[in-house]
Image (cartoon, rainbow, N blue to C red; front, side, top):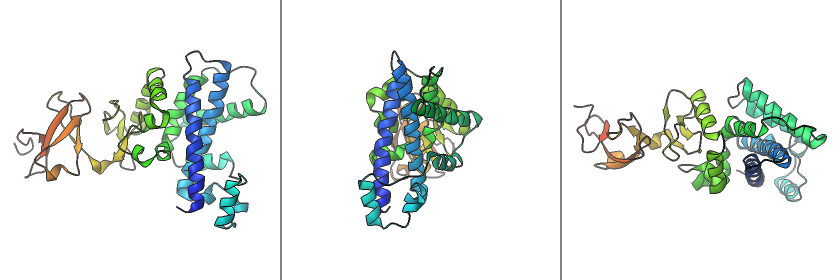
Length: 294
């Protein structure tokens, strides 16, 4: 990544996180006011525009989001323009067209995407005489169905991107807890996970929701809390305590170097020792006889 990419990445990450937190704080207000509704619309659309540009930047580099009249500038000139807030980025519709072709959007998702953009334009350019019905719940759907597909985990420090509750790191404990307890977020996220990846779903080792899917990119990602890791990191075995099939998760990279290692059942949340058979490589609860060989 060159210095121009680095500077733009820093700004997009920082500002996205501010907008998405503000949007959800307003949406989750116990007694939402007119101001909460308007701020939810403005902030969540702004968060989308920033994470959308970040999504393009990571694939196309800085030229993918900066207007073409700046493309022949030197790195020094570009960095100076960024520092002075004089750089100009492409309009949102370009980023929208790009990511719309990269992520899954059904007709309802596209309608939701257009609705929030329309609401935001109405608020900013003319104002609204009546508030849109159901907009606070729709903002949660917007987070689940669109923003969650735009790799927001990559806006976090590296230690919070993988093998961590990324959503808690993004929002902070208080807002994260409120989102899960006081909205339709969990149910919508589980539904979305099964809609996209119904064939290999697990309970998440981090948040315990049945929303930990194996994606087309061969990462295992939780659609609720954002916990993710490469599929080769995880192995799965049957649980002898609750009889759940394939729910004991263990370290697949190191099990072969140990007589046994400790796994955790994502279903009953209990710890279970497992071992890998020296004959057939089947993983069974330890010290149980290998199910496959038996």
